[in-house]
Length: 329
Image (cartoon, rainbow, N blue to C red; front, side, top):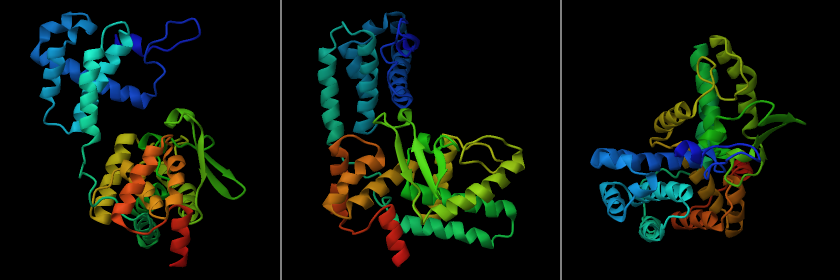
């Protein structure tokens, strides 16, 4: 069923009901539907022989939700809604009304849930940038060529994220000639529609405060690391042996670096929160820049971060504004 649901093709092919979705969304749905099947296999293995749409009864749906009661309301809703969304897409004529009512109540619970997971980890963007650039500059004092190269890369990567907070998948997909362009002395970052939620091209110019560090990484550090492993590719971010950094490796690296540098673990996605919250602290007018910064469409995203920034009551800036503050310091 799943294979057919995600099947793509041409004009006259049988296109799957979920084939139009982004890979990131499909991954989320796959996880939720897989969790449903795993629970069913553990509790009612005989039900797996039934047609997929008949496996889901009200009683089983409620029991599945109850089995996830130990999770946060958002995770509980994610699993329940993903399983229902997959089945509803594959069997559109079935009566999913009663299930949608249950899912609606789960969504309300999730929307009203206040998580404290990020408490203490939404740092000032100016502070994060300054510490990251200090780390990059300090690499010059390291005698070991490899350690010097890795620290220069690490500082540049953190500074890059503090100014250009791309999603992890987008960050690791950056490639020369495609998403990294050098024009008239500027470095342009361009992302393809399939890597943004808005399904449009997104681009920005690397701020002046970051450009020297990124240039050093591109012209010195990256070639050195690639030569160590004899690697040949066009990916921007590389490992100590010059291979492309994967999404998982990037996430682990950033968490480790931020724990060492700031005393708290900051995931790649939290850099987006830091960027948006810092920008919202400037003024109410600055909130309008949050959506293009994060690649979102809805105004609720901007309101969310403006409310967060107001609660923190701190005045800061972002991107070129952060850069100008740093220059004036």
